[in-house]
Image (tube, helix red, strand yellow):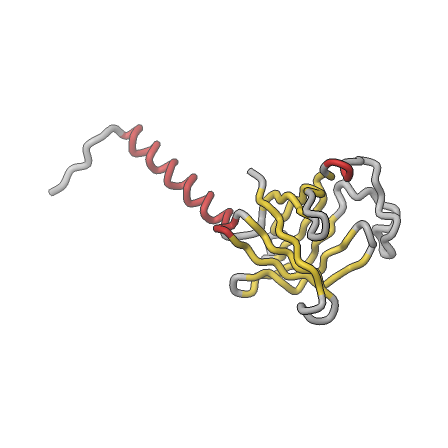
Length: 153
């Protein structure tokens, strides 16, 4: 019969470390979290986006804040044509209705607050969950643009 050598405290600490590691690995397997957007045309960081799960398997994303020249808390979506018209961009939900399909999330929409245009959206994790490729498109995925966002700690 093998006997575990060690104190109860060591076993609890080891268990806590295992649980923390498992939670970290799970968090990396989903877009849920905080992301820094990188503009696909300029290569500049543009905003911090928080992606959350609504509890029913749908993801949405909202603007936490702008970065650099886009960091204006009073900036509004003047080009928007829906209920977001003239609303503050900070705190605005720009991603809605994303559902997992295999290793991608799709079926939702993404808003470009600069142009006010809504696009269909697909997302896929890369680099072990450190990067998120976000594609906005019209009609079919071939007619669109992709940005690579970077996970924030």
